[in-house]
Image (tube, rainbow, N blue to C red; front, top):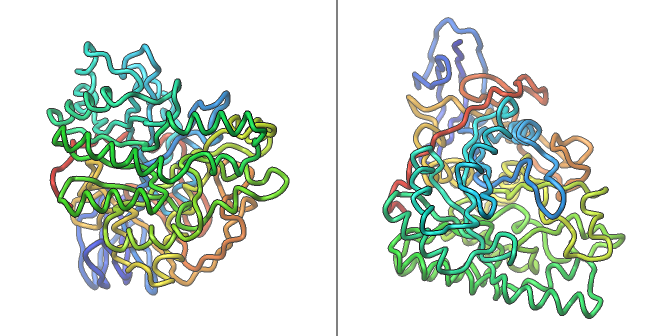
Length: 462
């Protein structure tokens, strides 16, 4: 199979030029101008942007949580991602307490087998780390699972203590893994939540009001301090507030290897959405919670100044009917999570590029290139270069689109961004040289996605 993409405006994190791409099989083999050769597929990208496929490094597909399971599996989730221009994602395998990491890895491979429509990687969530099993972390790195997530929240379920976090960090100093932290002070939050429930404060809005920004900032600061003692980098997931961002910024000013991602929901939504009538606020229950609106501008500034390096989605969808409704009388029983894997590039193009908050190059950098570098996939993924996988999106900057549950491809009955109007959308999406989406039509197939064996953390690039 061969493909020639002609006349496109090629945008990478570093470059912006007009040119042609020749793809042989699943790899970009030639980049030039006025290329002419016999090919199986010819794509004229005149007037369009040609960008590397998006990489979403934070999703939860087919994930058990709170007595139910996230509504997208590896087939529906990766397909929806592709419609939005994301061609690779990294999901989370969850180690059950009392079991080995290998058990979780095998289980998540089975979840993806025969279903994944795009390439994918896996992080390992550590919930149990006795001394006898610390070596399992190095086994995971050898398997290409080179990042580990630990929780400072959800006591009794996912939360681990500081000693466990520090032991895991010290091990990554040996094996090159990267620690990812869910940073909230879960113990303090648990006390606040119990008092709210006792006082009869059970509506969705209290999910936000019981998880203060200071609880996030304190945990971020603690995670960075532990990483500094261990002499390793740390990556803060789904950072939601200016308070927490300040802690990351201060650490980076001291030249510590502190990194962080945010998500579209924190850039576009606010705590007011949790207060929607008729239990509609439950649609916006995820953790960390939505913050006051003024935090949005601070997070955009963080993306501009590179104190935030990545935008992921934390895609963890639960249907409003039957699933979110489990917490109708108690916000603590609302499954935590929201859908977003399909709309990330659209929202960041509209809110970032069109609103002139970030450049085209920065848009590609935070949605594709830095995720690939941070998580051991670059330059195979995350750029347009000779030898790179032909994960390519033909992006129409003038396409107008209204985000809606009526038209999205995620297997969930609502959109967090219902009615949002965006200008700019993926027109053609290639995964390893194969056209899988073309003008709103699905051409791919379940099971074609490959597991990406990722390299260890690349080192002290900033």
